[in-house]
Length: 203
Length: 219
Figure (cartoon, rainbow over the protein chains, first blue to last red):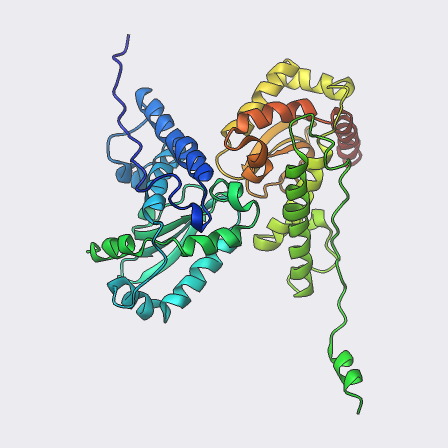
């Protein structure tokens, strides 16, 4: 009989209370399902796959960069959702001009507003489930990329600093089909302090 | 010069609304007893399905859709946004027709074909549910007939449609989250369990028999 293996992967704590974002359009109910069922579910499934010997050695980032198929999907979805929660805060939405990332966005997009317009447009236009990311590329330029399902820019050698989830489970409880409204709300929630921290940490 | 005449002669003539939204085959609350609420049908049909029709017509008016192509031809030949829109219009019409408030169950020629292909009806349903439950992300699961007159269970992303593989579709289930999130939240399995009980087997049999004739007449 196989030894009972410990859970290798864990569900990080939410960086805020479940009702913290409700005044800006993301209800407690959404968070309960999104975090408690979807995000937690990916952790549970990856641990189950691990116990069946199906998960190679390495961190979540290693798995994202090297794995494919089901293992990639699970690892990336765990990471993506953690990153998503950290990309928002109740007192977010205000990108101060003095932030280093604000200056870089001005350099690479013309202005923070122009970046946000493009980000919103990409998020609105993405067809089917997926994620939209702001990342730094090999030329140290900030770029917007989007992709299907569990898409994560680490696999393309980019370093992400911000993400939005556009799977329908992210907004269907609160906005039903109105993804545009959800995206507008998200922009008012962007945790620019965290984005700045990630930007400053870029090598 | 009369400014009104100048204005109206400048506005181009356009073929309005080449693509249409097929009426629902039943009232919006018809599937409530079967687990798909009127609210879901309202959003799914009036917003999502209707939205695809509206957007394809807009693309058409902007000259982005090949002229004289039917929806099926667009599904087989187009790519990108035009394919997505055309396929989603078709897929949703097919989905509504794949369900009925009350069905006599799987009988006749389609039942026989399922037994031949899958051993038993239960085995088919188990395979169907497995595909539908495990499909990752938005997409569709289809039962189709191929050129060799075999039943094929397939699943695919987003706007996937088996016409593109030269198969004739018989039945589909929508596993985009908008199909079940109002009624089931994340519990896709419960949605699929209920969907299976709503399958319009009379329609599936009709499609099956037409598909056989169609393939045989092309030999």
